[in-house]
Image (tube, rainbow, N blue to C red; front, side, top):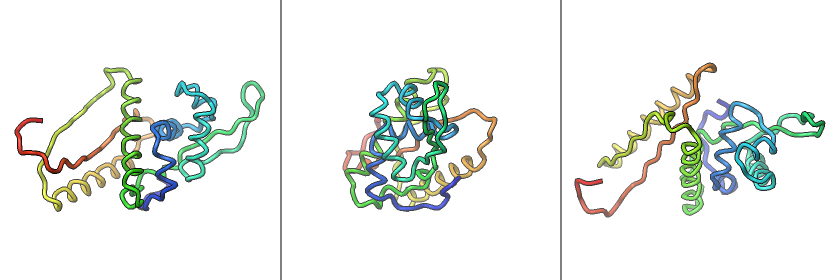
Length: 181
């Protein structure tokens, strides 16, 4: 992993990541360097729309351009690869709660889009629940999950199947006590 240490997100980082398309581009460029045209075709988006997101991601350091190459038709093209700088990015300290919320929702929208385009039989597990925890217990849960996810990311097996995951916690303050959910 290229950026193993946590770092605080900047406003520019948040702006680059505040659209679901950004997260889908990052996912597609994780294992394979892809050109703007390849991304646009795969995402069924206009090349101009994708290029805008690619440039924003590259300027923020989330994508890196590889050397230009000739396409099958002889045109010059530039492939991009994910830098993995989002893995330990601390969004909470960027100073703009509304923009941070947009980034969080963009990750959710991107994950949802990936689920929709996947074979329904490929969805292996979805769990949802509500737990009542003290601040200390909630911090412990987050820390233990972070460590577990870090362990499995470090264990990545080149011949293994890709598994997409999303861990999201939303505090639900002020709700009445009920046994329903």
